[in-house]
Image 1: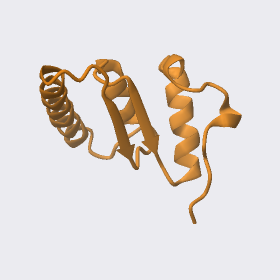
Image 2: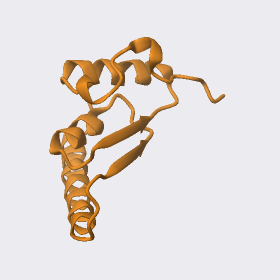
Image 3: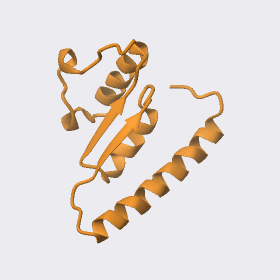
Image 4: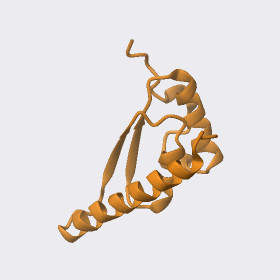
Length: 99
């Protein structure tokens, strides 16, 4: 994955991870043990992978409309060893077109 402005992407990712950690800490203080994340327009999964590595969420649902990016995200999940947390049967990933 290549972002045209990697410095901006890293700043955005740092901000996002800090906000998610803050939210998770609040939820854990309120007695919630399992948190789920819905990531809309996940693209190739660059942020999805970083978020999954934090261990803050027991489930992440990543949504993308562009089939090329869906395929790239699935490959990213597999290459980063995160398939243990998801359905690793490519034929069962939901990739239905909404258009």
